[in-house]
Image 1: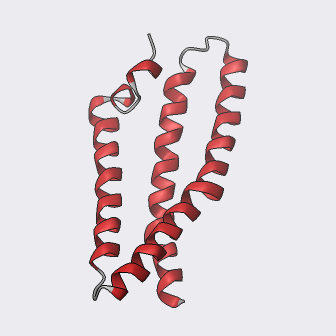
Image 2: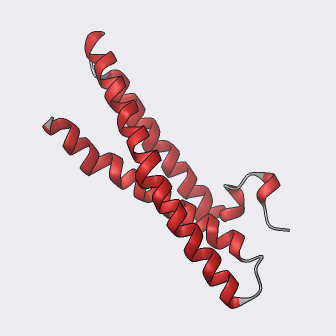
Length: 117
C-alpha cells in the first residue's frame, strides 16, 4: 500500500496536474474567439472548473487503476517492466505535449477541426 501511495503522490498526481495545465492552455487558446471580456472570463472560469473536475475524478483514477493493473500483471510475469514502461511512456507523452505547446504554440496540440480561424 505504501508503494501505491508514493506512486500516486510523486508521479501520477504531478502528471495529472501537468495535463490540467495543458487543458488550461487549450481553454485560454479557445477563449481568444470570445471578444467580450466578461463572457471570456466566465467561459474560462467554467471550463477550468470542468477541466479540473475531469482530471480529479476521471483521469487521475483512470491512470492509477491502469498502473495498478499493470503492476499486478507485471508481477505475475516476473518483473515491473510493464509498470515502468507505462510510467515512462506517460512521462514522454506529457513532455512531448509540453514541447509542442511551448515551442510551437497551443494550436499544435489542438486537433485541426478545433483550431482557431
